[in-house]
Image (cartoon, rainbow, N blue to C red; front, side, top):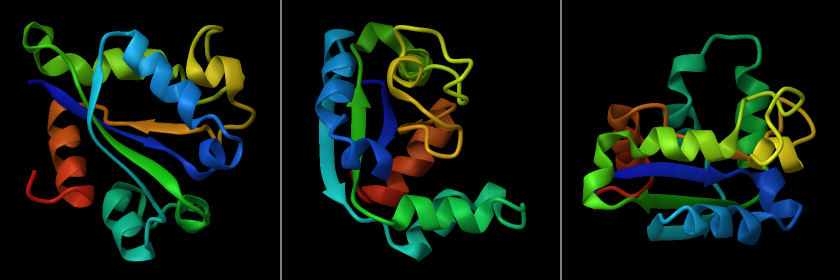
Length: 139
């Protein structure tokens, strides 16, 4: 089955939005094959966000994603959805900046600021496999 990786970030957990986010994913016809509420440690966060290492916002990003539990999920779609299942999830999420995210998307309906934008979703099939291996090695 095609799959992708999603994080309900700490702000989503703190605001009680995980159920709503999962419901939207499931109503789209996708399923969770793996999910775990976990506080992400600094080393894992650094590996996950390594492409941002050295950028001015890197430390704030690490502090945010490690501050409290996040819901980590492997999301699957039907076989005929193909490897672009990540794009389906990213459309559900909406634009990175909640101020410009369309109504009806997760960020458009619930997001308040770009630095705490509720969800992360893989941006390609390759990124999804990389991220799944970081958070759920061996599956």
